[in-house]
Length: 100
Image (cartoon, rainbow, N blue to C red; front, side):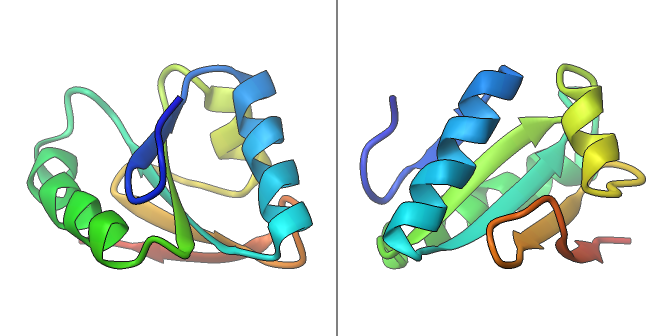
């Protein structure tokens, strides 16, 4: 389990749901980095995400591999990788920002 100021990797639907529940309970902003192991732009962006996680310890940063957790990615409307999701009202809805 990652500590404060780190990016939390969600590898199962259970861990994804746990992190959303924790965010709901703490009322913390959650930023989700949807990525893929083979994605070049994702690899380039990730160091900046890690840096933000250290600089903004009151924000929860999650990382989800779209190939490992397709159901989660599809559930929030993620159409690809290098997408950033900001869950709203702690449900599977919110804003998606795509890096192109």
